[in-house]
Image (cartoon, rainbow, N blue to C red; front, side, top):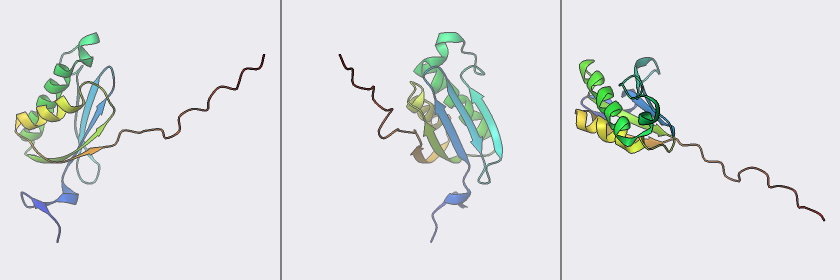
Length: 124
């Protein structure tokens, strides 16, 4: 038996991707077949230069994305977060405060396991 949220199966819920870089927060939403629904970023919400990297800019972007989704009639979503920027979790909080029901939060941040090869040993 599959879980349903507002009558929609989990696999068919829209997915909202949050990319939190150290200088900006990018949010785009797709439907279950990965067709783009909407896109927004801190710059599109009016933050310029160094203010794009603040957590308040991430929260404002999350609120704006949530309002756009609600206007389209989407009120239940899945969230995938990528990156470790300051707007990472505040964007999710902004979505929730806008009235969007967040069903699951997935972290897709890439982690390198071994890192780069070390320098060769210096011989004197």
